[in-house]
Length: 335
Image (cartoon, rainbow, N blue to C red; front, side, top):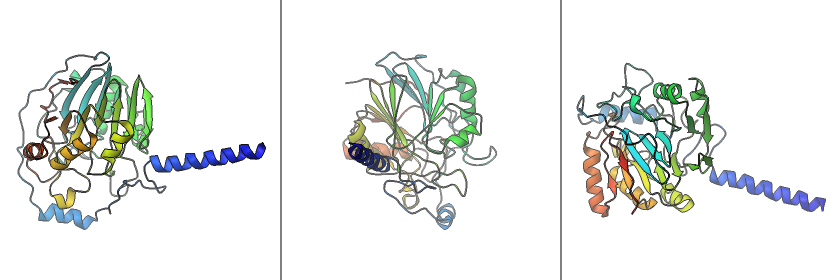
């Protein structure tokens, strides 16, 4: 009997180890890797892009009116959403308020005096936010993990911050203590919602020597509906994997900007045609474009993502993929 018990424990140990290896992000003890690995770009490639490619001109400022929320909290079964700017989305689902990759800073940069500067105000004033319960951070790039904004959220609402593995220390350095770290395919059950951290084709870094040392990804939120937030990503097989493992989303937030030049960006930033392909691979009922029109990060013009998305929608015969008005609250209507 003792031998049978030991055999059972041994088999269970093997199954657990294999499960963690298969379902978690590839990790060699120091750095994470994508499901479909691509070589890191050398500094010379970055310099070639910066000095041999000319970016299209952007306006220095775009006037836009700040929006407003419809409710402080939704009822169960209701979903309201508001794309505030860039990848910052307010998601109000089943009475819970969630915000993704929040940034209200003027620049996306390690310093306040240099780096890409916003060309439009956030669509919603920080002071007008409803009480935030959860903050979802897709990865640690400065346009997605903005520490000044995160500390303001902590001070005002004391929400729970959900991040990928090895991002905790950075937030704790700013006095943020309610942090939950997640691996790919991990699920957390919180406030009658399920939070899944899912793969993305991207990378992480805050400086010269920490590339891929913290995990990146997207989120699927499950309540009475499924809401997918892609964060920042290139094209990959994981879109279909998310659909197969968790289910097709009712609402998806998919990046449509920061994709030119393609020879440099294609591995880690989808273009609008790939955004529409992602919508189809996910079998998303409704998708919304994010990650455009706020900071000039790459070479395309400010309105190219919208033009290219409309072209891709026509070519792929897709209707349910919208360009948001920043700050305008929308209601998800189930058909």
